[in-house]
Image (cartoon, rainbow, N blue to C red; front, side):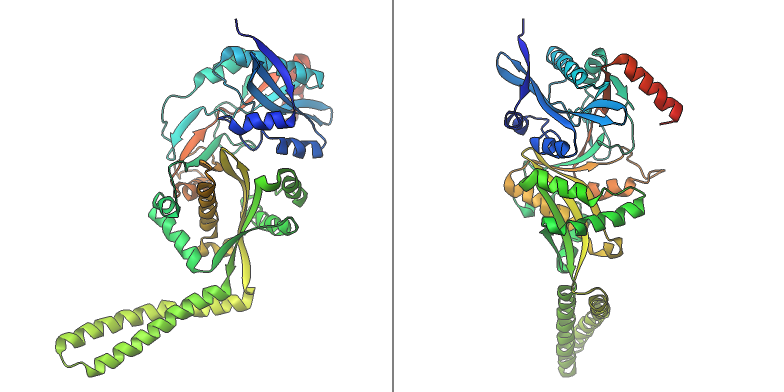
Length: 422
């Protein structure tokens, strides 16, 4: 007979457990707890001990929205969902705690992987149907089911395994050829990345606004990103990519000047040539140099024009990254698409992956995709294709589950939502 006890944990106890758990993630941390408390939500860290050892835990928040009160566990709880006895005991404790908090329902989005897939969408092994069945047996409704599309807590995620990569050369070698070229072009064009300070977050917000306007999404307020910065401290990074048009100009001016010097040298040699064979070689060489000079001259003119129009330094792309011992997650990005040809996003993600390699963080999570893997009728295919060029894999998560805590109240709420068309 197994012996379980339901416990309330301190923030430190919870963090120690979550740090080493195979499902640990940025949502299930005391940093997120501080963030939610700052938003006026009630937060508790709850767990189950078996014979004194902590076996499962989760951050639960009680949210009051108008007349509705509900409990949430984003990307949690951290638990073996295939252990029916442990899960059943934990859920019963969570149900009681949620009811004490006035919640009519408990919403969870387990961080346990339902099915691992290739980045082209092919299954790698059998799906974890027992997890889903165990939750349903405890009274959970599988809201939305195995859906495709974007959701608030992404059900489909693109991930790259970095555990066997040791340096930048090895990292670049795992990318598609096109992506390696993108990184090189960005660097040669004077694109540089840096970490933003708190007082620079308006710049990040502005770049997100550009992307939101294009994609038809609602941007979060600047205050949200400031609150995240305050809550996560060293475990959050806002990174911007900026192009230095003075460097861009110098790079192409140097290339043009070298070609011009080569042209002059070959022309001089051509006038002194004494054999037909040598003349033919020099003529071909001169033709190639002159062919290369034309695009180089255009780049010099373009760089001068951009430097005059936009100034020396222009922000191109920015992303928000959250650090966890298990992974780094990119949850939010924005870009100025007028400068797409400089491939700033490719450089940002490459340098962040390199940071993971240097710190020994084994996973890079580029987060949400829509679960559709062909271009037909798929407005999100470009997002998938961008991520695929880094070469990773896909985790299909089980999705959202709702447990009625106050069945009558929950049923009336569902009827009201149906009538209102929500």
